[in-house]
Amino acid sequence: MLKTCITGSVYYLRYRTHLGQSVFASSALCIQMIEAMKFYTYSDSTRFSRNIYVRDAVFQDKRSTLLAFCILPNEYHILLQQNADHGIYQTIKRTHESITRYYNSLFKRTGRVFDSKKARMEYIYPEFRDFTTKQIEELPMYAFQGNWKSYPWSSYHERQRSFLK
Image 1 (cartoon, rainbow, N blue to C red):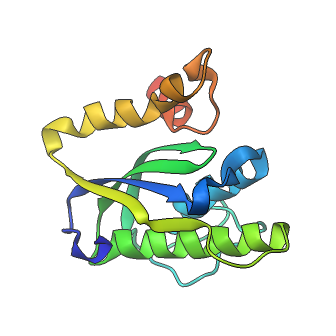
Image 2 (image 1 turned 45 degrees about the vertical axis):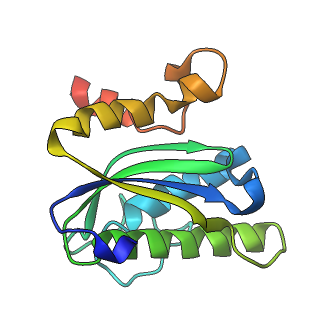
């Protein structure tokens, strides 16, 4: 599925956790997931760790661009643009491997964290890119009660900070 992505195109992806586990119930795992996603958008063979963050690393070319994301307790939604052949595939593969290693070592367990059988991928036409970004960032409004704009695990806050600069 991910190997068929076309360079220059934008894709919406949703991944659920294996057996509906609330993997992203802790702040530490959400932060790790966001940092890993950003880190692996670059075409570099360096392995991500808690000691190397995106802002500290020296990178080469971007294999994909992270346009929007939202992390919910048992799934995540992202909007990625592929910049190089197999860019999205490599970004997702390495992110999943990293989070699986981290989660399994944290909770002293083995096995997969993400369920690829429940994955969803859609090509996003250019005219729907902004709409899809907004939909992804507003997912907490549907999942939780209260003010969705205060939900910290969405790209909404990053987009607002860059918009205000």
